[in-house]
Image (cartoon, rainbow, N blue to C red):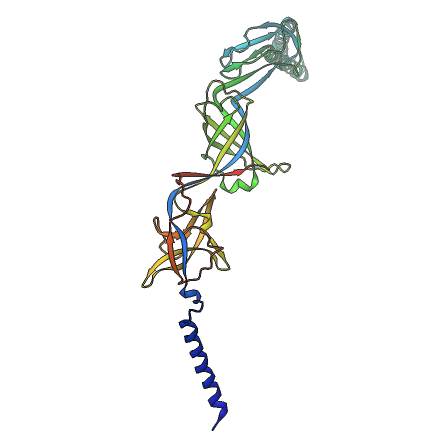
Length: 374
């Protein structure tokens, strides 16, 4: 008899017999025979918004610092501080008596040069003067004419005018003060609409676009609620020192107490996802093959664990957007909502579904707020 063939067969029969006896004796069941209790929740659909919290500065629609373009003594101030002014309105005048005297002198010289030119032309036709003398007379008249025009421009600049409709702010000079081109008379702000200027870190640049929305608050508007705004400008340059880009937006319907120069806290919208499929963060299981959720699938022996691959999108506190990958996950489908990393779950394991111990209302709209530090 060949013992080498008989012994393995006998050993195998003995192992099978032992396993049957262990099962009859109440030995531990295999993983597939266990029933695991799990909390489940339905997949929800909602709108997710990703926003970044930043700081900004309120600015006027237009703002101009007014200076005199010529030096001289202030002769007249024709506006009140805080007064509404119109474009082209004279706000102040510089003493022009010396300038007017220069214009009169230049006018006399110009008239004399004109008479001299007429005489030389007559003499030139009679060959009494040379072509050189005639050309000199022509040049002198042209030079004096240009000097007259220059003085006239200086005379016009003696009047300091409002560049656009707006509000004149505090003045820094009085009648009798001597102005130079470096002296500030006042500033004029166009308050027909207000802007906010924001420095946005470069990492958010891919999601910035003109037309984007934001909300903002100032120290004086905290009790009045948030204001809304719309982005109209995103700079094409990044500040090398701060690694941030300048973004400007219009403040929509600002209250009267909001003024240029105010500090504002801004919540800038980066991305909006409508009808996003959302699950609790605790429902996402990471693996070498990517992210997964576990769905209780109906089978003959009850509900069993089905591992479904997904991609993740926007995250908000406690929730994450899921994007189905080659499957038909939809709103209302149940998923294991907690403990997927701590429970011993394998595909096909029998599940006993229970309601979550702690439930809360899920909002229809959820914001993801990011820090805006540079």
